[in-house]
Length: 169
Image 1 (cartoon, one colour):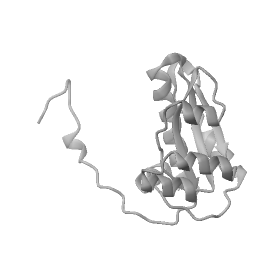
Image 2 (tube, one colour):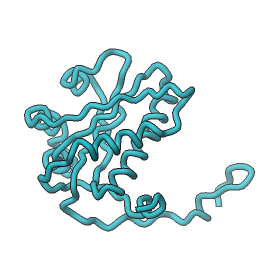
Image 3 (spheres, helix red, strand yellow):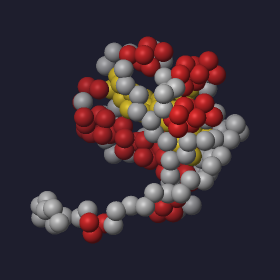
């Protein structure tokens, strides 16, 4: 699958088959993630693969009141937690999300699906032993899709493009 096809086909998947995802594919996807542009070439990202059922259940419990996220977290065979060194604040978060987009596109090209879910606070950091100075950018339930939702339509580019300055149309 070429890049443009992966971009067109990528959509948020929230229900997964229980099929095992080989480590070789996960490593390939993460390797592509690390090729993302990043502020001052600091590569602020760190990855935690959560495969342990008990840990996954605890993370799922943090989203019990958000049913679509709960389903995604409980059905995915692996959770990918993308953390970042927060020394550069917004620049580090922006860099982490460039990495996340590469990961999501690579996952699509490999026949996998995922959805980036935001997690903030001390509870997930304590659970995963994330040290001071690092924050969670996202938790991505990752696996083989067990659904095929319609991709949302996008606002046409000509309604979002401004030349030489911002202007409301």
